[in-house]
Length: 137
Figure (cartoon, rainbow, N blue to C red):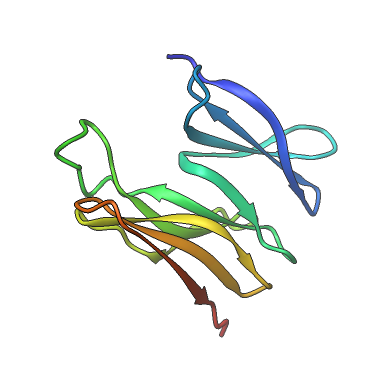
């Protein structure tokens, strides 16, 4: 399957985030970060869902595939970690790690230091919403 570009969805401080999906359009699997003015590629990420720009800096709240865990009922499929991706340093920081029992979906920012996420349990398909506040050193 060839992915196709859905177009610019979000912009932040001179950068634009573009998403690719499968031809049916039902799930996102990649995000390309480009300069907003010249459309030069900065980075390509393998993510689930859509990244969310931080309100005041070039950091994305994303769902990253945890390739250390293979889910047995869907081959190959991986659970999703909740992470922050700093576009300037090109470093990812895992906030909440998935297991073989649950995964995390990035939902939104709650101010400059808070994130909203969903915890999805595989066995009973229940969902819990949570908030996490980041304290910077």
